[in-house]
Amino acid sequence: MKLALTALAASAITTQAAVIFDTTPRDDQAGFAANSGQTWMTATLGSDNLLSTIRVDNRPSSATGTGIYLAVYENNAANGQTWTPGTLVGISTNAQDMDVNGGFALWTFSNETLKDNQRYLFTFTSDSAGAVPVAVETGVRLNTGNSEQSAFNGGSLAFSGSHTMASQITTVPEPSSAVLLGLGGLALILRRRK
Image (cartoon, rainbow, N blue to C red; front, side, top):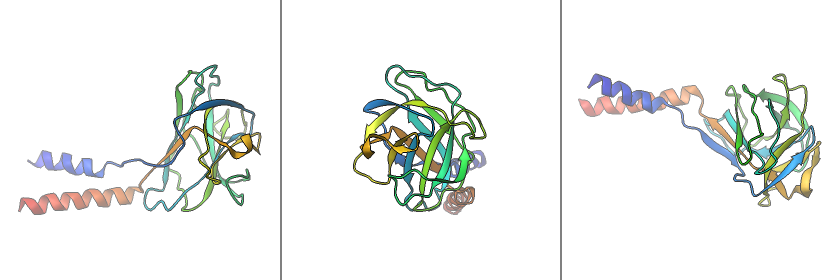
């Protein structure tokens, strides 16, 4: 019984990723020059404010690109239709290849803190310091009219704002929030046991 309670408490502490941005799946493809990427804006994140992963869909055909890192910056622009990199938030902990037709690349991050209602952008780089921007080939999706999300090509608005890169961004809760949820679940289990 004690082992079952421990396992249940551990599962209650497990963090669940929250999707905060999603423009997948791709419905087209495009090539982008260096200094390209995607803008987006967070909403109220609550405790789910630690950057976990960013996924970008590859092209369905003629996919290319290997050893690519992702850098995330605050976007100091007045809206998502403008590309103004500000403070570096973080660089992915892994490099990804984007050369598999119809696949996707999934970058992981070190749980960098994201702010509520903040504009951000991500861009592609060939080094773990984020110093060397690279050209990429990605899947894209028709923009649903949200002016806070746009694909950029060489620092300029791509497709007049009509498309986004097919991408998905997830966050996880702060560790303290997950622990409190787990302890609350354990307390309920123990209380029912008495």
